[in-house]
Image (cartoon, rainbow, N blue to C red):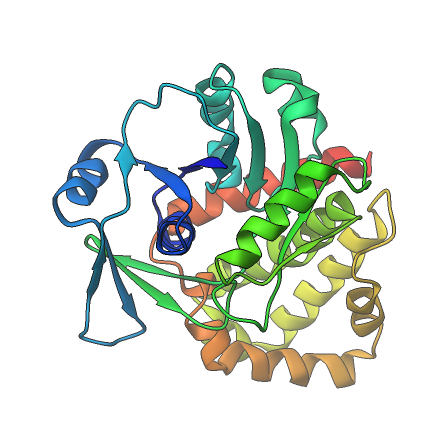
Amino acid sequence: MRVLVYGAGVLGSLLAVRLHESGHDVSLLARGARLEALRRHGVQLAEGDSPVVRRVPVPVVGNPAGGYDLIAVLVRAHQVDPVLESVADLGGDVLFLHAWAAGAEPLGAVIGHERVLLGFPTGGGTMHGDVVRYRAPGFLTRRVPLSIGEPGGHDSPRLERIVRMFRSAGLHAKAEPRMDAWLMTHAAIAVPLGQAAAAAGGPVALAGDPDAVRGMIHRMRQDLAALPTPPVPRGLAVALALPDGVLVPVIRRFLRSPTATRSGLNNTSPATEAAELERLAEQLRARGR
C-alpha cells in the first residue's frame, strides 16, 4: 500500500516514522521551512525531555503527484478545507485522523463520499524547533487505540487492510463501528475542557477554580445531551452523571496531573488551539440542530 501522510506536525511525523521503519511505502507531505528541514535532517525525534535526538530519513514531498492507495490526514479541524482541495485529485482513500464533529458528509462532498474514512489518533507532544518531542502513552503504545471507521459503520476490506497495516507497524489500531458518534462525543468533552483551560490560563489554574470546573462539567453535560446519537463510549456519559461533589475533585486532580499539564491543554499555540476549538464547537451546534 502506497501511503501519503498529510501533515508533518507531531502526530503526522510519528505516524510516518512508524510506517517507514516497518517497511511500508510512505511519504510525508510538508511545505516551506518544514519541508526543507525534513529534507536536510529527516524526522528528528526525542522522547519527552531526553537529550537524545534520533533522525529518521522518511521520504518527504512538497507537491505530491498522486498514485496513493491511502492518504492519512493529520491536521487541525479548522485546517481541513484547504486539505480537501489539495487531495481531491490525488486519488486513493482518505483517512481523516483528527478531531472532527461534522461527520463524513462535508468531506465526501468535496473529494467523493466513497473515498472517506474517519479516525482519531491518540498521543501527542510538541515541536521544539524541528525536533518532535513526543510523549507516551499514545498510539505509539499498546495502551490507547488508534480508532478507524467507515462513515456508515460497516466493515469493509479497505478498513481491514488499513487496520492490518497500522498493526504491522506496531500501532494499536482498531476498527470502530461508531466512529462518527465517537468523534462527536470527543468534541463534546474536548471543547468545554479546552476552552475552560484556555480561559483560566492552563489546566493547573483551572484546577484551582472549583466553580469554573463545575461550569465546565455543566457544559459537557449539555453538549452530550444535544448530540443526535448516544455518546460513544457510553461510559463517558455515565461518569459525567456522577454528582458534582464526586466529579469535581476527580477532574481537579486530573488537571494537576502530568497527563494534563503535558497535554494540549498547555498548548504553546493558543491561537491555533482556539481556532480548532471554535470550529469543533460550530460543528457540534450544527449537528445538535
